[in-house]
Length: 102
Image 1 (tube, rainbow, N blue to C red):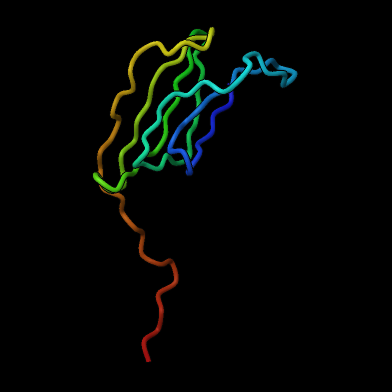
Image 2: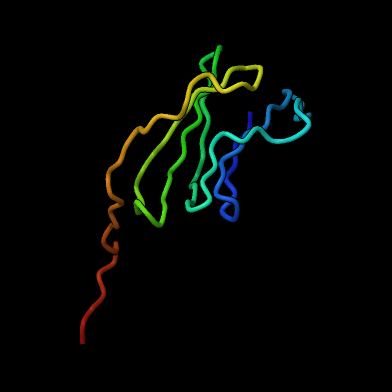
């Protein structure tokens, strides 16, 4: 399974593929979509029975920092609704190289 996010449509989608890279489905499997949101850096893990897909989520209403996840069966069906994994605010790391002030 491969996963990707589309910043224009605000969705996270998946595609099931064979070991050779051939698509198993006629189109992407939409896992989550929000018109007012941006999904970031989706990732996928597999335990031998189900996939776990997780992604960062930010919206105009709630700000940035949420991480959501859901389980997907090997047949491509969503196993359960998405869950909120974390709702911590985004922390911006200070610059590694401090700027000098004249």
